[in-house]
Image (cartoon, rainbow, N blue to C red):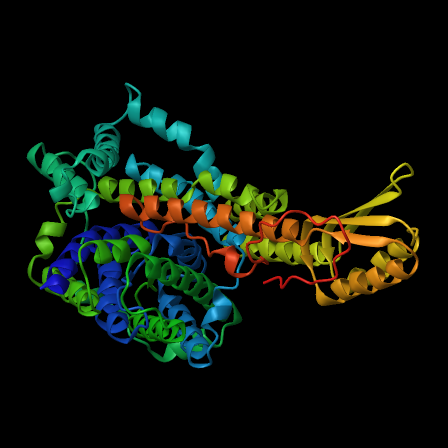
Length: 547
């Protein structure tokens, strides 16, 4: 019973989003609905994350729009076939975890860039205006679209489309904030679409409405002889690789985040990636949009009390039954209202709090994030992501090759202070050894490690040997290991608390189709056991295990 109720709630959320994303990509709403059906009935059955709901996602709108513009709808099936095949191969060979090995700065930059393009492109559709082509042009022409909608010379369709779009967003905000607790199980998206569609129908607004074919399955494009030719086109293969990468990263990050919301079965990432691949392979055969695991539908599924994968499968069944027997209801929905859903989704993807969160780990993370966003908006998605990856690699190399040393000596106390900043690795051993050799052996040397990002066994061994040498010369070595552990522990705690708080707020509000998700870097960073002992004033040769 729990799964049945949850499946119906998820169906109510998924239906308008499937149509809105399809329209945003420039294809029939029926294409998006078919993808949602496959996401529920196929991936829901095969996937490794039982409570994750799959379907067309806002995160793929930008790249799919470019693909359809470049290749045309006739090559969509071949591209999705390539993407699905790559995902299946990745899952079967146990490569799922590698898709998650991407820095949060790139993931969040990718989502923010997609959000900006989605916001700009759908804003024009929301006010019954035409898209201006590129992302930059869409952004720059937003003021003109607003003027066109509110000026005295505006046509009736512009005014009323803008009214319906703005009303949709306001209803979503109002329902999310003020709806009675017992009614919050009803999705805000559904409430907004229902109210706005009723207003448009009662007052006969002359705006664009959802256009569905008499037979929804007439939109399917099965493979033919040309498909084999398309599959040998290197541009088709490259586009398939792009779709596979973005869809896989979004799916697996969503699955990781979803595991934090329930105590049930944990995600089998390789099985989930394989299931997504099978689903997208089927989508490719039918010539419809690709899918990913999506956060809001999955979060609603958990919040509505789902316990098994049956809720996921049944939501696909509900979609199939609805479009088979009640398709005329969908024709009452204004396109501007669906566009408003994606405008709101795009805004939520551009989460400025992410910048503050990333800044806790240095300016370099913010630079990677900003570069990714700017290039996605100004050039294209692939260029932005590749630039982010390149900067991340440069940062990694710099981090593990930079070691700054500052030495000061106090003649009155015969103490030398050595401050280390950066990463003390075997790559920097010659530099560190040269510095230590220049320090007097008969002094009391205090080595400060609190500014280190990392220290390996080779450098620890070097310091231990130095301690023995200094004792023989009448000197001593003082290292407060607890400062190193405290720094790593505080960094990890700060990030975890901020990340969990941000994630809970995002999933509870259910205000975006694809929420900004950040893998917890604490699983990759160094730390040490809690050590609250007083600072040692004598030589220490004990090495604390740095985890």
